[in-house]
Amino acid sequence: MERSLGSVIKLLTPSSEYTGQHNARLRSLPQTLRQLVFAIKRYYRPEWGEQWRGHFTVDSVNGQLGHALKHDDQRLAANCLRVGYEVNGARRIFKLRPDFYPAGKLQAEDDISVSVTLPREAFNGLDPRECHGSVKVIENCEQMLFQLTCPVFLYRA
Image (cartoon, rainbow, N blue to C red; front, side, top):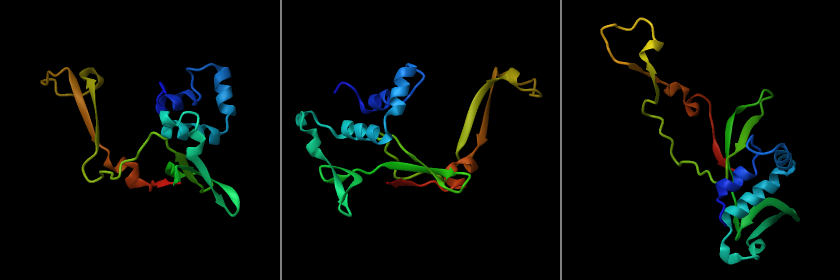
């Protein structure tokens, strides 16, 4: 209970912070097992004690237990993001972290810019009468907003 969902995700994700043995063990775990651990961590309540299994079920599909996990009879939906296509034309879909909740609206109507402040010495040809020690460079990058240049869809799997 002392560990947050984000902490559990970090613990079960290979990282250079961990030993090779730990990372190898993590890579040997099926992704479905990790996702189940994340779901249980997300929804578990201390008052359940050892009776947590009764709160998680799967549906029967065509007479077989399905792959849709349910918590207290509510199907758990995964947040996924499609980012472009593979070389063979297949969609590139990534499951987002279980503790990520996408915004309902994306602002794309105002200018989107990026800026950086650099030392004056990084530039040639500046007006010598200007005596500022740094220069702020601003670039409008709205055309680079990936939602505008290639379709990206958030959907529930």
